[in-house]
Length: 615
Image (cartoon, rainbow, N blue to C red; front, side):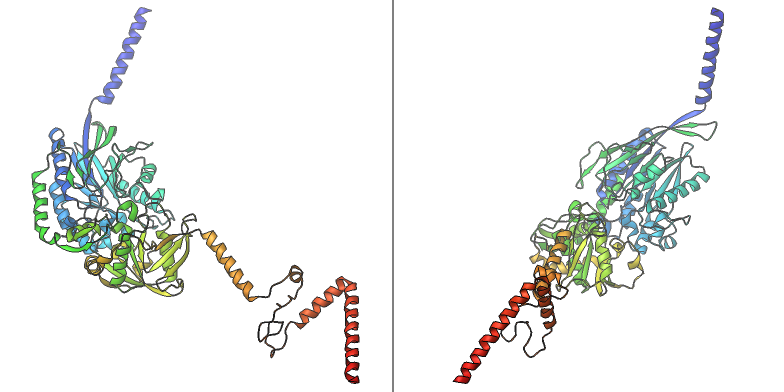
C-alpha cells in the first residue's frame, strides 16, 4: 500500500511539473511604461518634465517606454497662440511623443492651421471619427490616422484614437446613439489593427467622464469594449490619482489639466513564445505632481535640457509682444471654468457684447468654453489676454429665425445649473427660464434689447466664433448657412475693451433669469382675466345662469344706463325683457306687484292731469 501511494504521489508530482513546464517554459515577462498627458493647453513648462520622467524610466526599462497625449495640447496659452500651435508641435517633437489624439480644440481650428500642425509634428495624430463632425477634415488632412501599433519586445500594442464628436451618423447605416457610433468606430479600428498582428489594445480618447449624457463618456467605451486593456483619456480635466479600474478590468487614466500632473501607466505582460497569446498580469496608473499654476513643484524629476532650452527661447522671442498692456480693467473679470460654464458672469457679458458690437448684430453668443480663467483687476497684457480667450478665430455673422435662437438657448440652458461645455454667455437679449422643467422646455420668455419679445418667425442677426458654431446649435444647420466674417476675436475684443474698459463692472446684467414658469403663467392668466373683466359687464350669479347677460348699470356722463351713447340704438333691450319674463315666471306674485304699481302710477297720472285741466 505504501508503495502504491508513493508511486501515486510521484506520478502526480510529475504531472504537475509537466503542466507547469508547458505553461511557463518559453514564456517571457514584459513591462511597459506609458507616460501620458492630456489637456496641457500649451502650458509649455510641463514638457521638459515629461521628457525628464521618460528619461528616468528608460534607465531601468530602456526599450519599453512610450509617451502619449490625449488631446487639447495646441491651444490655450500665449506659447501656443503666438505660432498658431506650431511651437507646441515643435516642443512635443523634442519631448519624443509617440502619438496624440485630436482634442476638440485641435479640430476646432481652421483646417489649414491644423494641417500645418500635423505636418510639423514628427509623431502620428489620431482621431478618424472626427470625419462626421467636420466632413472635409480628413480629405484635406489625410495624415490623421485611426491607430498606431508599437512593438515592445515582440508584443504588438495598438493605440486606438477616439475623439469627441457630436454626430449621429454610423458606419454600418443602422440608427444608433452617438456613444454607440464611437463604439462602432473603435471596434472597427481594433479589427484593422488585429489584422496587422496587434495583441493588446489601448484606447487613446478625448472623451472625458463628466458629460451629462453617459453614453458620451470614456466610461461607456470601457463598458462596451471589455477587450480593451486600458484607456488613456482626456477632455474632462479629471484627476485620477491611481486610475479607475472598471468591473470588467478596463483601466482608465486621466491626469487633470495644464500639465500639472504626468501620468504613468504600467503594464506587466506574459508572452508565450510557443504561440501568439499574451496575458496581462498586472496594470496600474499613477499621477506625479510636477506643476502648480505653471510653477514647478517636483524636484525629483530633472527637466530635459533640450526641451527646456527650446521653451525658454520661444518665451524670450515672444516677450516684447506679450508684455504690452492692451487695457486696464477696474474690476475682476470672472471666467473661471465652474462659474463661466454654469451661470452668467461679468466677463461673459463683456465678451458677448464685444462680439455683438464687432458685427453690429442683434445677438452675440460667447461660448463659455472659450473663456478660460479669471482676470484680476488691473492691467491686462496681450499675453494674459491670450490665456483668457483661447485661440484666434474668425467671428461669423448669421441671419436666423427667432425660433432658431430659441432652440439654441434651450440647448445652452439644458443642463443648468451643472457645469456644461455648451453653456453660452449672451448679449442683446434677456432669457427667462425655469430650470425645474425638462431640458429643451425651459425657456419662458426671450426679450430683445428693444423691449419686445422675440418673434419666432422674424429674422435676427447673430455673432459667434467660428470654432463654436456647433455648440449652441447641435444640428449642423449653421455650418450650412450663408455667413459673413466680421473680423477675428483678439483685434475686435481689444478694440472693444480699450473703448469700454473704464465702465467694466463687477455686477452682471441679469441676462439669464431663473423664473418659476408655472407661477408666471398663472399670474399672466389672472392678469388677462382681470383685463377682460374691465371691458365686460359684471354679472350676478343669476345673470350668469341666463343665456343673455344683463348690461352694466351706471350713468357715466354722455351715456344712458345701458352704457351706450344715447344716439346709438339700445342693443340689450331684449335682454331686459327676457330677464323680466323670467322673474315673472319664477314668481307669479311679482306680476301682481308690477300690475299694482302700474295701476297706482296710472291713478296718480290721471289725478295730475285733472288738476292741470282745472287750473
